[in-house]
Image (cartoon, rainbow, N blue to C red):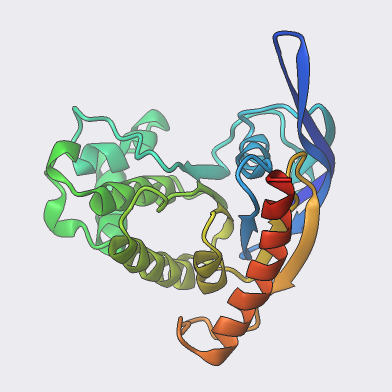
Length: 253
């Protein structure tokens, strides 16, 4: 198992008050599997992702990657955030090769890797532009290329398309699906969009309202290349919506 989460809980303490974000979460993600986390706002999806990334420590339980405990960030896990987090003073090439430079990769190797991933995300013609010259969708493609260029085995994505307009979001969903068919990474993807989850995931994990626990797991048995308007797609979307709405309703009780 690539990622193994056992008995995971996380409580935040502020001004002497404890707020439980996650409670006794068990989750396994197989190698090359694409798993989406869904649930109401504040249910701990991003907290869980940040613990897997090594940015946060759990209050109880543990996360293992390849059976090794996660104690901090690592090169085996690439992270793509909703915010683009690009360096404005670097070109597209400079941003994508940043991690490779830190690792001391030779210039010729960096050029080859960067060229490959810019081609993969459709940005080869924009290699010398700066972030200020790019659209939101293009910036997020740069962030994805940068994560992939470091050759992590796991990609952790925290609502990477959440700030984009609907049309750009669907285009990038198509791109990400295509990239996954080429790269075969292990992906843990946080989203609020049920439609996005059904379109991308092998499995969809629905979490409860806070404190977040695993409520239900849906295995998505659809073709790799998916039709958003197929009856089978709509069936999954409807079933998952029903379960998510149960938890959203609890938030407003």
